[in-house]
Length: 325
Image (tube, rainbow, N blue to C red; front, side, top):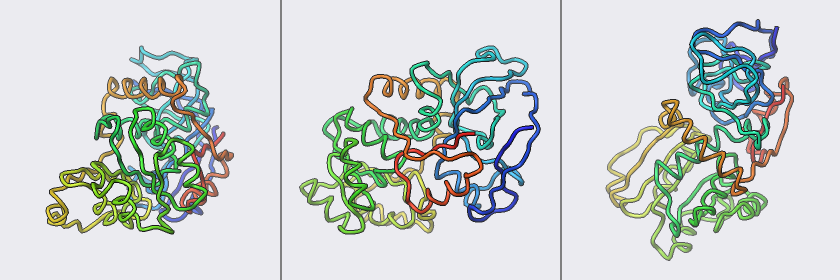
């Protein structure tokens, strides 16, 4: 038997339960991984709360982790037992000692990167890769706005933007987080609890605003973000930390300067094994070169998943959080 975290109904962190689960053989095209570390992400809370609907209940949780291959299913040729691997694109079920998933979701983990580093960075790092390199190909000298700059994705985005030579303005929720974002490479920071974000963006950009605004907060920051986008610029809404954006009036995009808006997902970019491999290779190179340092702010035992999610939702974590089975 193997320990795993699951939930049988939607709700707060208290619905998470630790249970015994059978260790099953992988099916055709699948691989069973013994997890050494598991990543914790905001999207996990969306499935738990019911904002996102899992395939069925009870459901496992989590889509990010790293470990070694214990068994391979029929037809799998690119991996073998004992390989060090990482994953960050699903399916649900990473919160456990074992995870069985299709081989197309796995990438081989270079020896230079630890299991904990990989679990802490796969989903967030791959998200940063598609945001800064694909959704908008960030260029040296560009000035962009990034919400939650001291969080999991933001911590990596600050470093990645600096490596490119871009000027990232990080929106944060405290003086401590502002200091952290600047230490990671943010060009400037705005404390949303003390400052008018849109006004500060005008000041920092000499009235030009930003060609791109990256917003993972959602409902509470939607209108603020629109006010920070330059004419014909792009708002990238990639998360719902404060709730989903609903009831969008497209006319507002015209009024504010013929703006563009996109709602991308990692699954939409890493939708094939070759694309995933290419994205992971770029991420691993950024880490191996030292341009991105993976900071694990919190470690919890598997059975402490509920407490870990509670602290994440309350904004009381910094950097990445991992579960250690």
